[in-house]
Image (tube, rainbow over all chains, first blue to last red; front, side):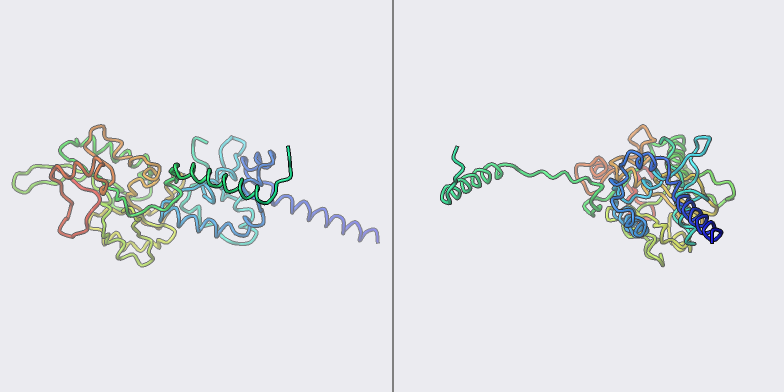
Length: 127
Length: 243
């Protein structure tokens, strides 16, 4: 009986740590904002942005490219600026690489991120 | 101070206040500051460029090409060879058959009013904005290169290799067609295209062709100018003088 309990508890701890790991790397700037408690200003509803971000981005891309509407809301540049993380050499790691913000979920659900076959994967030079 | 306001007094006060506010408000013209970037571009403008080849030296044209490469981030391709290399803007030399006079001119997308590239595009990727700027929507481009065939100016290029470290404002990717965007990201901010800025003299004038007060409109009214392949009736946005 006690053996079963140990197995159960270890499984429980394991699942918690896996769950925590999957959201560790949210990017340098995003982490700062989260620590300052400002993340709700940007994403009031986390569930919404998690589910709807493809739609938001697609809507925004057509508005920007075809109609010249250049607002920061739902701009891919803004996503990359906040959610990129720097490595130990203080250089930004491309956001679509393994373990980075975008790829963490996308690899898990098995969907490719096509954005970055054309778009820049790191914040711009002077950030 | 009596807090007991009877019905009649209340109506009197309210009416007086409302009338007062209405009188003041009628004198104020409400000015709305609409950020140009928040509303879609309209066909009230048509962006264009006037290039005076007499004032342009060959060095100036090289400067223009360099400025374009620097701004848009093309030209660093290592695996493309010869015709595969992207050329959003290029220096062209034309010679008069009789006098043998050689003229150099910069040639890029002419931003036609009736662009053949838009006509032939099977996916609607090749498109013209309301303000006359012709672009490739690379989200939709399948890389068929019909537009490159259709363009009389050979203005478009095809990205033959994987590109990394793109400019933030200019996504570029393998397998799609690309061309001069008239620096649309700068124009939307109220700036001029990089190539026009690169030339010190007024050899390249950028502006709104429709606006009677713009320098380009006024200059075009004064001087002799031409469109390249005007016989095709494409009504280009880029005009030349001196050729």
